[in-house]
Length: 343
Image (tube, rainbow, N blue to C red; front, side):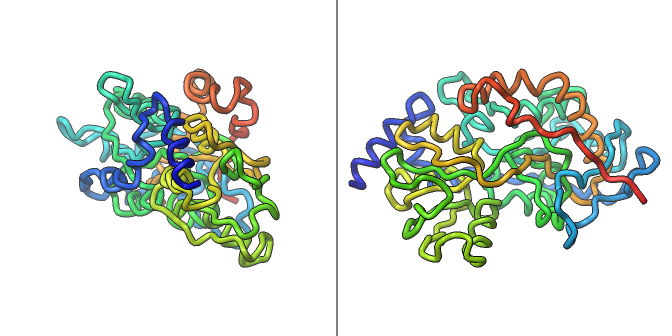
């Protein structure tokens, strides 16, 4: 049975690279591209308007709407942006943590000459670079695993992370987020032949894979401890990169994957032997993650997002995601942004 599943999985990858799935575990090391150390430039907080909180507060017990805990948009330069603009020569680039293996989000299409990074997240990165540095290609991409997104920001290895990263109260303790740029929710991915029907009792005695540090992993861990899912569900399999879970599924090492529905839909498009099971069981929003003290950069990204939602978001969705999520983007559009203000 395991051999048949492996063969079916490999066949399903098609034009995205027949061997890509089986190589992902090895590519995890490749993802950790050489880091470029930069001097801290996030120490200041700029005021960009009246009634704006000075910083992005940490999460607390009353945090119920993390997507609303972001500062008011501003096009003003502050110390973080000034440090980015002060980079010289080839180093005068925005340093951004991204994925290079998430189909339609941030990936390299081997069928394209040069195999440059492309996808929905990558389009947004180019727009941010255009606004801040006047050149959409003034970007140094750093491919980072799921579990390295927050450390990469905290250690100053990147200016920001644009990598299907959910805004959450817990993460607000560690990084700052822009306003949402995409709406999604957790879903179950499993073989079409599986008896699993969704995030329900059908997961009993099943082995489920999640990415370490992901909101899916946090959700399953919390639900199991609270008794909201059957105690027999095995959630011990975690991987550095979310896509590694699909490989485990194809190898027959796990029975299901839990991840963002937007990502799961792209993986189902890559491998026709798997499918989404059941409806989304959470509501989540992707945001651009930055250092907590880089308030001027957060405000600038929020300003860019205001313009991007009006001119750019829909075109990018149509190009990259309509084939996997449907032509109607309504369910994926982020809500009208709400921002922090002082009392």
